[in-house]
Length: 361
Image 1 (cartoon, helix red, strand yellow):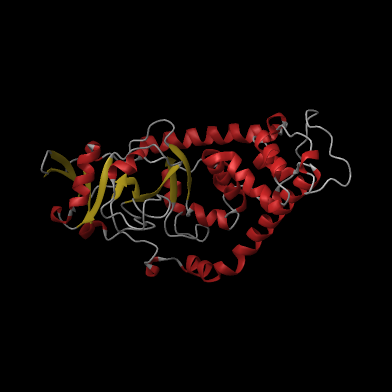
Image 2 (cartoon, one colour):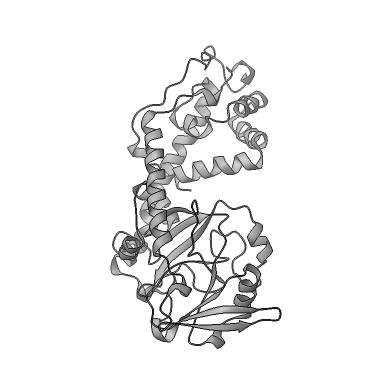
């Protein structure tokens, strides 16, 4: 996410942008506005450099996750016991962790961010597989740190990443980072699995779980279960393993302990507890300030034709749509409504993501 107060430099309009309308042009005269071709707006060179650096960092970090995440079948079988799980239609491989070290990316399906309901019981696996999502929220856990946003429900494992699967990592929930205006801090980091685990649940992490985002098309390569015996493996887990054709990883809670989640306050550090106690007092003000600034800029753009920094950043690729929305509108409220109608679902989603990341909505 970008830091609104830390932004420097100005975007320049190219000569392809026609001159501003004559003085006195207003909401009541939208047809007098100049045409706006956002695709011709120049980009700052340092922005392009940041994108290049960010992709290099992402690629380097992805390689580390590809090499360090645990695949049960590669481990010394003294610490991982292979077993078979029988279903109605087939036999599924199971791997019981009884002492081996591990690092795993796991996602509780149905938790916030998956958009498929509040809980994963009875989840439609076909729907999940074919859903159009931008990312999958996962947490990196290990034999020494098993903290999740939610530990209840069906848990997918993602430990055989392909090129392009890894998106980002931070030792704190991304939503919290966006809320407090600190996401940019981690965007260019090469945060290895060991570093991520080390910084999770510390003074700076603020949540006892971390978040690693994966490409939304990434499919699970295992189903993760926690329990003290093979008998604790749920029918839901067996169904999912059969559906995806992947093994079940059983992490023995009598050996490693129970996983923790956001409800387990006893496991939070004092620094994290203190942060959440005061969270509501400091986050909303900065978010509101930036939202108001963007709103004012939208109004100014409609009234004067002047494309400010925020408008260029978020709406620069929608020149034709902007012009069409302006021509249909006589108030700022109508402008927003008509713009949404003109853009359509896909562009609204892309635009919404950009604005949310910037404002911390």
